Amino acid sequence: MIESFAQACWETDAQGVVVSDSPSWRAYTGQSLEDWLGEGWITAVHPHDQPYALQQWKDAVAQNRSVDAEFRLKRPDGGWRWTNVRATRIFNTDGTVKKWLGVNIDINEKKEIEHQHLQLMQEIAQQATNKYQKLFNSMEEGFEILELIRDDTGKGIDFRFLEINPAFERLVGLPIEQALGHTCRELFPTVDDWWIEAYSRVVDTGQAAQIEHYFKETSRWYKVSVYATEGDQFALVYTDITEQKKAEAALRDSELRKAFLLQLSDAIRDLAEPRSIQQEAIRVLRQHLQASRVSYTEALANKTLEVIATDFVPGELDLAGKCFPLSDFAPEVIEEWTSGKMSYRTNVSEDEYVSDEQKTLYERFNLKAWANIPLVKKGELVAMITIHFPEAHAWSPQELALLEETAERTWAATERAKAEATSRQSEKKLRTLFESMEEGLALCELVRTPGGEAVDFRFLEVNPAYERHSGIPNEKVVGRLRSEILPVMDPTVPLYERVVRTQEPLHIEQFASSVGRWFEVRAVGYGPERFAVFSPISAYVKKRKKTCVTAKSDKAFYLN
Image (tube, rainbow, N blue to C red; front, side, top):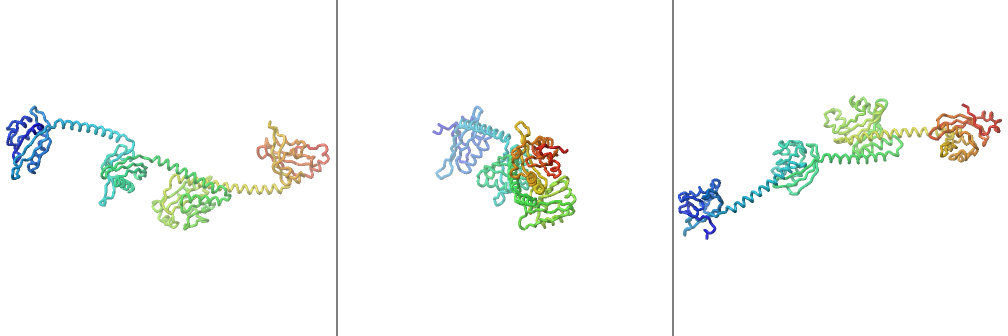
């Protein structure tokens, strides 16, 4: 029965030594009887398999256990075929080993199929490896295989670079060979613990994570996908999103800038008094910056800086009204201010250019960071906005630009308020003059036909003296046409049109038959289509022209 499926049957003594012939073995291997006996069978085993086959047989005999091994045997034609060797013990009645019986089953076809299958799997694996390697080397994203390094308590404290794709050099800025096999802390000793803690959570929980964070060692933002692999190893896929973050920050700064400037504009729009504008502007600015103090200072003619307005948090010194001679400041500081150059410090306590004496002064004012924004007009320092922080403050370019714009807007609003105040004062004086002057004064506007011919004029405003001179109540004059008030044809319309057109003054004497009076009239242009008429009544003119009333009604005489 055994011979029906076994290619060779054989037996040995209790020590595993061949002592009897096996025609089937010799027929299968081509060995002679002399070669077969003893331990000569080993020479029929493939040289590469001999150490394994001999060790398997010796271990079985020594350990008194069965044999089940696979190795190649030589064929009579010189070839090699795989066989499955199985051997078991035959015992004496006393339990000792009497002999060993063994068989060799040809499994060469099975091994060839296994080899082909293995070869196919290796080819598939190699193709996958090639594809992976191609993707690994060509992908734009960075890809890394890392290993978490733990301390004695099991806490993650570092990680080692096991695999790195070429994108690493572009995204991180280091050669691959400089990083491969090294730890993060070896490359970046001051790395933020945040990164290691984030990676540790992924390894410990097995939960993938997507993170965005700033890596100060490269001054870049990264978007990172983290995946646990096996053991303490994990994989990263990451991209540089620094430009995206800059764009987002610029947009955010732009929106914040717009919101702040709108708030500033709303706060000072309706204010007319310069000091109120300055005070409100620095209040809005301090709250926006969350600073401890913001002051508006003006440069006086006596080379002194006076704090005009200040806004501060409770507990800070009130500097309003304080004066600081320019001579108290270093020449280079004064030069910066007078040239319009902004100056600032992020942390005076750690600034090597700040003297110990200055640091003591800053400490007295609870001051660690500051900025001065000088305003220079026509080459002269005129004002300055100063911002104070009790802690270190990193001034961003956008923030500094906003401070400059705020200073300019505050200055412009202040100057506009001063100009408007001056204008109101002048207007008040002019109004007083307008109301009290002896001469009649009328502000008029030409009226033209669709073709452009001046045919009339409208009274826009008249002073009280005009009513006394003309004898016509002002309420019947203002807003009405001259032809509505005095239907008689007026020969002066062309004269007034010339005044408007040429902006040259007019001086005439005119008799008004409707009121029976002579007037000395002066007219000047003061804007498009508008002119002003001065009419001082003259007793001399009235008397001199009395005899001419009937002959020269509504006639005008040039006096120039």
